[in-house]
Length: 419
Image 1 (tube, rainbow, N blue to C red):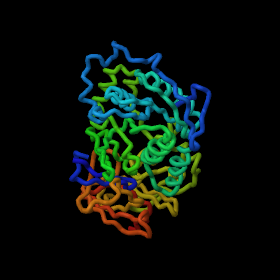
Image 2 (cartoon, helix red, strand yellow):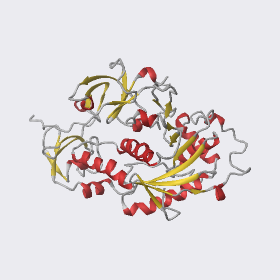
Image 3 (cartoon, rainbow, N blue to C red):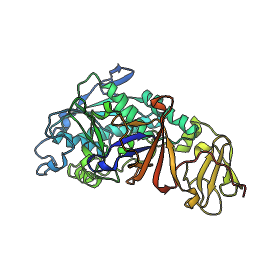
Image 4 (cartoon, rainbow, N blue to C red):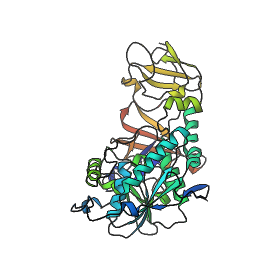
C-alpha cells in the first residue's frame, strides 16, 4: 500500500491507508552555457575503469537488490553522483539492472574556501567510485544554488522561520535546475541515492506516488515532499527497496573506494563552514535578551534571535544547569529559555502550515484520518487537517491537530509570565 505524501512546509502529511505501498573541474577546458547553467564536457571512464571478469560482483546474486531499478525495462538514466556511498551504490545497481547510465556531479558550493577541496574530493571519489563503463559529467549550479536555496534560507532565518534547506535543494536544484540543464538530452529517468521510492502510473492521466523507503530510519521522503508531479514522474530511486545496512554491505562487496566513508550531516550548503559564522556574515548581529520563560527574569544577552532554534541547548552559555530555547519574540528580539523543556506547558498539539501542495494534485477526501511528520525521522503522528481558504489557492493554510503532544513545535511570539 502506498502512503500518499503531501507537501506542507515544514512537514509532510500522509494517508495511513497507504503506509506500505506507497561535477568538478572541466576536463576539456571547454565550458558550454546552457540556460544560464554550465555543463562541462563529459569524459569516459571506460578506458581505465572498464569492468572485467574479475569484477567484485562476479558470483554474487545482485538480482534481489534490483527491484527499484526497473530491471524489466531498458532505460536511459541520468544518475546524480555525490561522491558518497549511497549514490555510488545506486549507480552500480542501475548498471547491473542493464540501464544505460550517465553520471552527473553537481557543483553547487558557493564558498570559495570549500569549493576546491570539496570539488576535488568529490571528483576523485566519483571517478574511482564508478568502476563501470559510464560517462561522467559535471553541471555547474553555483549561481542557481545561491539564488534559489541559500538566499531564501537567509531571509527565512531573518524572519524566525527555520526552513529545511535539503527540501529546497531537492526541489529547486537536484530535480529542478539540474533537470532544466539536461532538458535537451533524452533521458527516461533521473536517479539518485535517496532512500525513497516512486510508484509510477504508466497511464497518461495517472499520478506518480512517493513511497516510503523500506528503511524507516533512513527514509528521506520528508526531504522530497515538495516535488511536483512533473518532477516525480521522472525520478527513480534504486535504494528505496534496500536497508542502509545492506547498502553498506553492497559497497563492500563491490569494493567501492568510498565504502567506509561516513555519511554527511548538517546543513547542506555550509560544507565545513560553522552555522554561527555563516549567519553572522549574511544576517549580522543584534543584541537581545535571554529571559526565563516562566518568570520573565533576565538571564543574559544574545547576538540575535536568528542564532537560536526551538529546543536548542548548546551555545546558550548560561550557568546553573541545562536550559533550552522554548520560544522567541521576534518583534522585540527576545529569546525565552527554560529548564523545563519537557514540562506539560511546553507541549503543543496544534500548528499551522502554509504553501500547501499535494503530490497527487489535490488533498485526500478524508482530512481527519491522516498522518504527519513534523521532523525527519521514523516517527509519524496521527493527525487531522482543516483547510482554511486564502485569497488564492496558493495562499490556503492548514490547521493541523496531532494526536500526541510535541515539544518541538515553534512559538515565535511569547510574553513572559507576570506571575
